[in-house]
Amino acid sequence: MTDPWVALEPGADPAERVRVLRRAHEAFTTAGTVSRPVREVVAESWRRSARAGVGPDGTASVELTDGDLGAYRAEHPLARVMPLFRELMGTFAADGEHLLAVCDAHGRLLWVEGHPATRRLADRMNFVPGARWSETAVGTNAPGTAVALDRPVQVFAAEHFIRRVQPWTCAAAPVHDPHTGRVLGAVDITGGDGLAHPHSLGFVQAVARAAESQLALLAPPRRGEDSALLSVLGRDEAELRLDGRRIRLSRRHSEILVLLARHPEGLTGDELLCGLYADESVTPVTLRAELARLRRLVGTGLLASRPYRLTAAVESDATVVERRLEAGALTSAVEAYAGPLLPGSQAPAVVRLRRLLADGLRAALIAHGDPDLLADWARAPWGEDDLEVWRALAAVRPSAPVRARLSALEAELAVPAHQTPAPTGGATYLQRPPL
Image 1 (cartoon, rainbow, N blue to C red):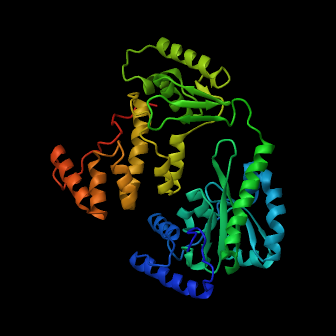
Image 2: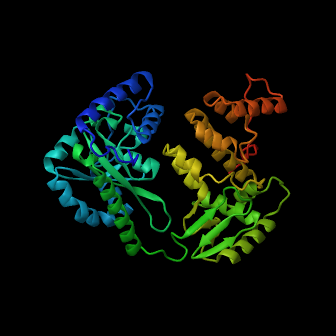
């Protein structure tokens, strides 16, 4: 197969592929093994589904109904491009006995439209507005997997994790905020085996890009809004991209923006003091002076007081990693992780955030057991002395160089093989500050 994201290669027999996939699905749900021709993207999704506790006989749950659903849809950014979705996909869905579906960034279906008979069939498996179709809720499916991986994906028949969904085929693509890059949700086409054609994947991807272009026209970035990006991973001094400017921040200003971005509700002066300074003798005057300098640097429109807060959402590369990790998209999370959060900072609250992010990634890597991802972490500057990760790597890839490095590291740290020390990577461990 030339494209691993397309479900069926040219010339493949759909009926025969369904039979093979059903046998493979049964083997995975009973023994945990995955065999060919299951695509790697599907195998990884099955594993994430199993780790999330999804059962093959489960069903989607409806979380929003009636007025709650209507209010949520009305306020959602994708409501502004529903006319475009209907124009581009509505006739195709109705004529082809398919469904057009749109979900939010959590995999919750907002709209499901299309052929009436197909909708009635979909209702039986709760493929309805208000139902949660995230991977963590119902396993492998196109809209849920698309938002989990942040990329277009096609899911064919028995590639679905839940058995009652396996008669269906779907293709979905994520839709992003054109100004921040944040995933808003996904657009999906669902129907029969004919949607396994490569054209359906390209179709939903083109529709998603058209929606992003439309969103950019409908809501151009405004000064101080939707345009602030903060880079804090793998660097001691953050970079703030604001209104077309790139602002290099001092370490203290970097720490302040990290904490305020983390707390959009704002922080009092005392809370900021506790989060920034381990030395209790630092006075509020010192903090106010730093905030005044920061306000002059970024402009008065971004930083407000009483409480101290940011007047616009500031997206950081750290939150991108967190969001992908929470969605189960481990490979994407690792790719976005450029290093520890402000590694030189000793601000107590920043230390805690750095530790939480690194620990979350490490725990997911170790639990996942992918040798390539473990090797990438172990050979990075922040993982070269991480004994726990090297042990996990040796368990799945016991090559001579890996065993040699593990032995040297255990001897260097003088830790018996049955003990697991605190990680020695980029995170520093201090008690959580009162925030």
